[in-house]
Image 1 (cartoon, helix red, strand yellow):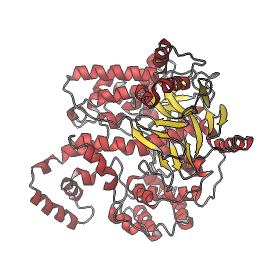
Image 2: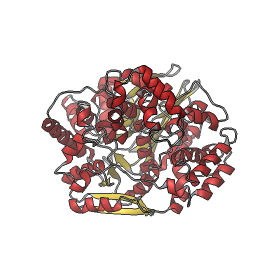
Image 3: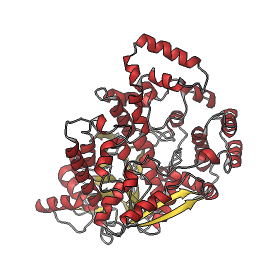
Image 4: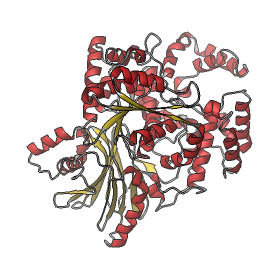
Length: 620
């Protein structure tokens, strides 16, 4: 796990100490991603900079790494979990190795297969390879988008980096109004865009090629596809256990200690139970909040006790929460209004004091049907038997009903097609709300512009699978994996996610919906697979994760902070601030729970302070 920065020039440059010095300054911004080592490489067309967190082959894995008499150079962030098997294949073909690192495996694959190498990889990765002989740049990002990859292409050069802030250091950019519109709907900026106009993300499951003076070409090499297969429950339970066991085992390949996050739910508990088979002395980590009802520390401790593992926990106060928030937002690069990223930041800090690598349960909900919202199609099934004309009448009536009227939301959802109502696991502001909130509202940018292409690819799926597919393409990439990477790397901690393995997805993609949502339970078949491995008190427990008490705090501990932030934030030209104050007043007076909507605005305001107003200065 590391961080990289690189430039590709359209015209040849002098190789000078000045260029190396410039790159050393830029990569200092990424010191948190790689505190163990750093390196630079420059030639007439490229500048590569690298910060390393040493996990595999601590002595021999220095980057930028070269191969075949410096014909190929690479900068690589991530882990290739099948590097042992790939190395053996390459040795059998006559390749020689000078290190034990997975980085060198990538270069041997490229020397033989060029762009087709990506089909051999199992892991999380973002990398760039400079082919000096062909004067050709090649890079790729892993299947699910676990590792970040930012780039900016202009007339003079192409920039690429693990973090957007490194590009902004050398190339200023403007706020992107379109991204702001989508942020207010989704609580994050959907790929490939960012909150700044010119900087983009290489989409997950894609690679690119680029030559000087030629435009970048981007190609897809993998996309998730569901294809249900009839199998018995027992057969599927066996397959799930087998593939997860294998995934956890290869995810624990490391030359440094590996720990695991542990909440009170089944996902992390399943991973921890399997990881214990590899390391019976596995350390687990949990956080909670001092607010009553917002801590899973006791449940996690009970799980650890049953498994006879050490659990290290930490309780977060509202004051500490506020003190760290600007730095957390700096690490994010773009605003992300998921409150769960804050406890993730703190649990990563605690884990980093003991280990360099942690396992986590991200991805289980998207693959195995874990969100409660996935039960909605079943609860709305009566509307499938109502004529379109009567549905339209009911929809008109529901609009007449006042807010809070019992059944209003149920009728609205039941009479609205899935493609119009479901945009992902989180939906913040409706279009009419954004129209009031924004000084400049763009009516052509409603949220379906993001989801429509995904639904078009999902036409043959049932409703639940469509929802899963939307979440994998949006929520997982834009929220879950962004906060997982940024909050752990803020503390120089590598996070690995065994559920998000292409072999695990192959099994999950075969499941019929009735094996995911059944008997009012989510992740039905995953829970069955966990029986006998995961402690009983966890198997049927509802999903909570690391809950955050912002609903209460915005009425009490964070109220004055929120008021002050709204007043002083230099966002008058962006927001109608009176609308923001109204949201806060209605929330405090218990007229409506506006906590998530408020949090979306407040996080943007903190981001604006950090990246536009520049009122904070962070070295790390």
